[in-house]
Length: 147
Ligand code: DQA
Image (cartoon, rainbow, N blue to C red; front, side):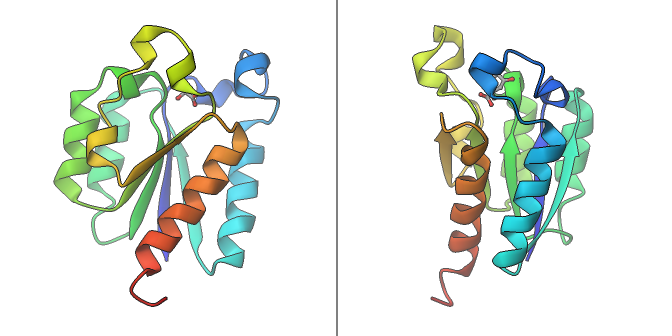
């Protein structure tokens, strides 16, 4: 299984960005943890971070025929981007939404996700573990016919 891992805006600053909320691991460290966990599940992760909505949209379009699923932390675009949501709906690849922080116990503007209705499910609030749990859920979903 080849899986696209997408990180949205400001996640390149992980490790130094509000560590009380987002934890102390850097994005590179999270990507390494994901790679190792994927390997154990006989899957491969292909991470990409961008601060640009259009780059994220283009990358999702490019996922067709290349990846079997998408793991995405859309960052603040979660709460604003109809374009990202439409891109995920358009490519029709199983997508799991993750957030480091629990978006529902934070500011009201973070409570709504445009991504959630086009995702299989969402994992929010477990720090870097959210990504690992999301990966596990995505792989399980993709392999459920084999189990
Ligand atoms: C986030 C939550 C978003 O509200 C915020 O804009 C982020 C990170 C998270 O992982 O907790 O950039 O997606």
